[in-house]
Image (cartoon, rainbow, N blue to C red):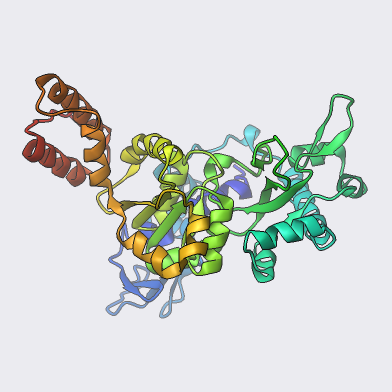
Length: 420
């Protein structure tokens, strides 16, 4: 059975090879790589390197090397490639695509090609648009940062140029263009700064746009529509650039906005990533937990930040394991990460991350918020909430037990959890 290269690429993006290899081999971290005994020959001294950045393993004695599919095929599925792919997909809770439902790869190539051509035109148009150049300078972005993040602007005539090479159907399928009520094609991100959206491998899959004029009553940020190659809930903005720094520190910093990420990277905080302007999804959380043991979520200290926390916690409790540490950095009121790093600098930012609050603190705060625990009725409500929280923790057995003990010792509440 044919398996889509896009699906294989997706699995490679989700599964760290060190995680897979560590199921069979004890690994020792050496710098940014891991070493272990090679199972393909009688190895007495660790001679196999595992490189998460490249997604490959290699033995320097017997020469065996490959990616996650090669490893799974040779170690666990008796050489069956399809079985290896299926095994990895099951681990990642990813459904194997049916042959009939496989995306048309040729069509996807055209879509990606159209995106890259549009990016060239957007970037080329930026130099000619003084309003856009001045706006980015006002936001504190250097010319080097603008170049590195390939920021652009949608200028007049872009669609006309694109139509010389691509059909209207491809331009619409890529999300670049839509039809108006008259049936005419128009730019979806017109009068906006364009922000390229890339997958973890650095392939361009879409764009976000930041409105250029504050009098514009449309949303501040817009993403292109989801396509065959772009799913908002699966992408983390900036991951292609942050990945080596996340690997090195074994820590990821998660913020809310595109410009937050760009500003943090410019200032030296290169572990920063963001969602797609929407609430973090379970898929994105799994991606983060596959690449880092420590996650630091940075939220504005306002109602929006509180809403983000309430939305995040149920998903987080369902996927967190005892191997992971999750912390929360609430910035001073009136600051978002973009403003904070520019105003206070990297040192102050790093200190705020070091002083971030542990997940357990937020859980206890949530359990007791709005309750006066000297009241029997309020204690009853807190017990119900504590039970809901503990039952939501699915994969972190010790976290659940320690939280139950903390609730018992500090609140005098015994939590009864569901049988697992």
